[in-house]
Length: 64
Image (cartoon, rainbow, N blue to C red; front, side, top):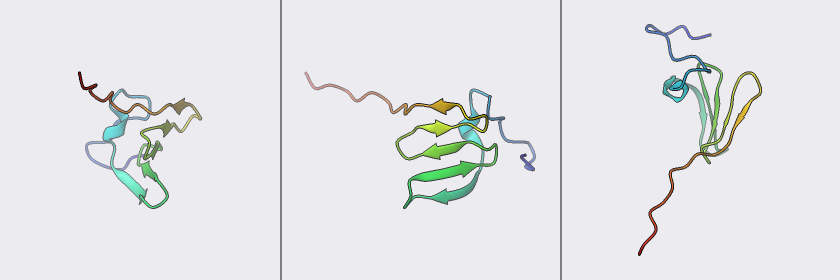
């Protein structure tokens, strides 16, 4: 799918979020990467094979 050189990481690669943006709709809360991964503003993802990656925001520090 990717035509870049060097090619973007495959959707199954651990660093798949490093692929280049193809479409970006911040007003709708989603972006499409060139490897077919849909990224959502809540950090969730939809992979091209239909698997869902739940939101994975970093944990916030708790004040003592």
